[in-house]
Image (cartoon, rainbow, N blue to C red; front, side):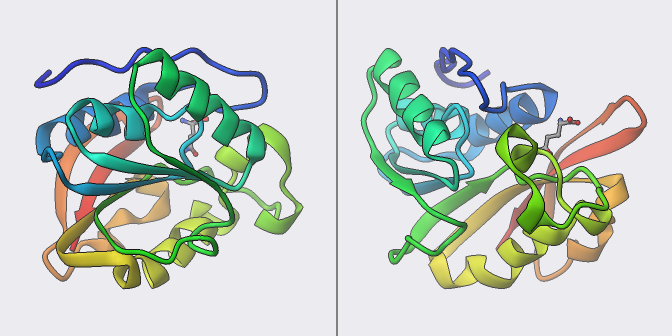
Length: 188
Ligand code: GLN
């Protein structure tokens, strides 16, 4: 641990931080630099963005679910940090660029197409191979990075994370939970 840990209260209908979240927030703690501009996409309870804000980053918290944005706002207040709070689908309401974009996408493989997924399942179910939302992110994130910026994203073995191990991508953390490997990828 290299920084203060975020205090997080869970909220009804919002993904409560679990092992994947902590693997990611540990990586955020290791690499976030004070003063940098950070986007926490799919913020949920706000854990990633609050972790970055506690380290002195200037953070935009965004989620497709209004109640997640409200939850992140409450948790930010609890931790004495401020930020910008945005409700929107992926990058639709985001115009600026960032030093770091953090994303814990819905990565669980599911037959349900993402459009039909509602409520808390939206934080989990990622369509075919769990890549539906992840692939949208990968197609778009570079347009929202400043020079030398990076994206931190969670992927799993079943998602076939090897596919994204190119163009200077690094594995910042790896853990085995239940039946699968979970990795934090740093993408340039
Ligand atoms: N860890 C969650 C689960 O296995 C998945 C979270 C996610 O898709 N980001 O249920």
